[in-house]
Image 1 (cartoon, rainbow, N blue to C red):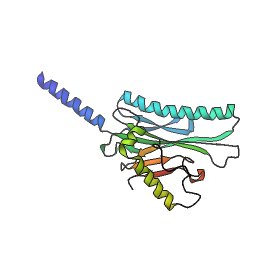
Image 2: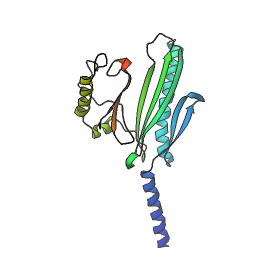
Image 3: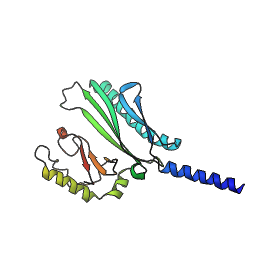
Image 4: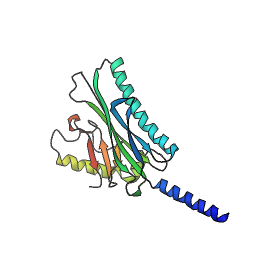
Length: 209
């Protein structure tokens, strides 16, 4: 009986170790049957963790679609192009227990706008718990001063009109956009128009370069 108990316990320990250090399976889905609205479904092998992660993703898609409907119904904006896309940047790279996903939504209306409206959501989760990592986690990885120095170097090497906005530096708080890539490099990401001219697009800084 004791031997059976220890064999069972050892098998359980292996299962826990494999779960805690395993990459997730990412399946592609389309939102409400619209092939333009693609999003990831994350499967870790733990239903509780899966629900926490996928609830966040579902929330972003729902908010985007509801926002487009509000534009049309309440503001009379004819949104004739809308889509979403995603990219998995880090999936337990190096046994990091981190899943980083970029989920981008895009909409464009017939209202004479020079540029479409886009937002890239940077989603970082702990695979073992489903916890969404926020700016408190970012503050543990890098100082605000180091991020500012990276932006200052970019600004010094840029010409008008691609320099940063006058009030971009010094940074007063941690940026919300960050993710990790397959080499576990930390990236800081700023939305289109957030700290520079809208036409400059998304700014993505690799903090390990």
